[in-house]
Amino acid sequence: MILQALTRYYDILLNDDESEIAPPGYSSVGVSFALEISGKGELLNMLPIFQNVVIGKKTFEKPQRMIVPEYAEPTVNVAASLLCGKSDYVLGISEKDDKKPAHSAKRFAEFCRLNKELLVQADCNSARAVVAFLDNHKPASARSHKSISPHLEEILKGRRIVFLFNGKYVHEDKVILQVWDKHRMGKDSVLGQCLVTGEISPIAIKHRKIQGIKNGQMAGNPMVSFNERAYESYNRFKGQGLNSPISEKAEFAYTTALNYLLLPTNENKKFYIGDTTVVYWAESEKKEYAKAFMGLCEPEMVEVEAPAEEESKLVINKKAEKRLKKVAEKVRRVQALDVKKILEDLKDENPRFYILGLAPNVARVSVRFFHSDPFDKIVEKIMKHYEDLEIDKEFEDQHTYLTIQDILRETMSKKASDPQASPLMAGSVFRAILDNAPYPAALFNAIINRIRADQDDSKKFIKKINYERAAIIKAYLLRKYRNQPQHPIQEVLVMSLNEQSAIPAYLLGRLFAVLEKVQKEAIPNLTTTIKDQYFTSACASPKTVFPLLLRHSQHNISKAEYGYASDNRIEKIMNLLDVEKNPFPSHLTLDEQGIFVLGYYHQRTAFYVKNSENSAESTSSETN
Picture 1 (cartoon, rainbow, N blue to C red):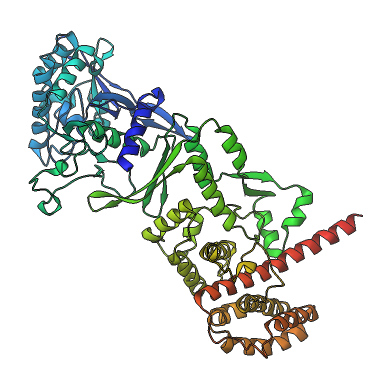
Picture 2 (picture 1 turned 90 degrees about the horizontal axis):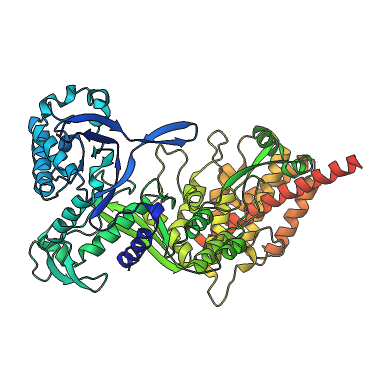
């Protein structure tokens, strides 16, 4: 399925002039220098052919992409290519010459052998010029040549070199290309039925490597390979690619398409989830689908002015006021996702859309996930993910749409020197989004564990219970119970406070928030609150904690300026709990602990909202 989809995408790319995709038997590579030669094979000049690329305020030199005869990526083995190569192959010099004198000599000899063998068959001046150069070139004196020495440092870094004759690139000569096509078609091949196309055709023995995967090998990792007898089948000893027969044409197509998707210059920007590299494509010539998908996965953050009348709404408390000053009267907001407009702009067709997650596994490529759906279904599922996460914010400038990166960030300790999310959990969360399925239990467990372990620390931007964690808990429970016949906790899995709910765990969370508030009002400069000391215990074993907290709260209520208001809230919650008939529970299950956290967060956020509304009303009355 994966290889078939990539093969079809290759055919689409081949018809796109902007993709610069290579046809079968050729490679698209970055070339840095053109070696200009005369008809007698004399080296006239070494021309840099970099392209200047502006990234931010800096300009970088990038090799120019060219279509050349199939390029053999250098490895520990000696493998030359036609009319293109690095300095050790084309000029017989490299950085390794001092320690390994034979390194460049072997590679230059192989480059000469292959190129002479093919170029003598081409009846054209450019081929004869290259043969003459290879016959006359002396690697021992190459470093001091007047055309090479100014660029020697860059050349020895492993930059690719091609040949230039009479103002034209030699590898583009039609006569030479005819010789090359005849050569590659004439190779001895094993015929078989291709698993991708179903056609009887030459089978690829070795598959090209996939480059551009996070933490992958520098030279790339193969997606299909067999290097041990134990992995082979049907008695195909040393069969390698014969164990999974894929034609040379299909092998070239899927590897070329996948390497194209992994290029950093590709418009369909790859992104990372944990250790997984994610690529995506639509079975369509239109590039808007991929751009729309990326926009859905990572909504763009923009800076907008905060008008004077809106500032009063943002000033929720003193902390929020400080935050507002820090952004210099500007707030960062995520642009609203206009899904209807996205689908209207692309309404002409609804192509199949593919999402592929890859990670290195020893020397090979591991497929973390692969998802395929019509594009509108993909959009629908991603928006459902955002909808399930919706919950009242603590501050106006917080993310409206929590991306998968935002979610995974909350599972990691902010004190860790190198925080890393679990690779398996990252893949499971993304699969759940694409399948519109329940999130993995590992995500919920990780969030609960972080709430237990973390303590508020403003200097390190650590908050025990924040907007993101509350949203994740709400979405997890919502998806877990959505398809069950009876949904016992539906009433609390909402955006804001539900004062009518009588679910004990939710009420206990609300009660804890009220008790914390009255403590802060009674002792304004308190550095350690009951949340720091008792939250974890209260969440897991309410019976052991709440009687103590309620006794202490009476002292705080008597000292607080608005203690009577908190006393009324406590009384209302206690009436709903009805502890005389239903005593505080000894233990709460993991799901009930999540509901406890939601009750706490909803109640605490409701305090901020009311303070904000009261502040806005007072400002309005003063103005009038």
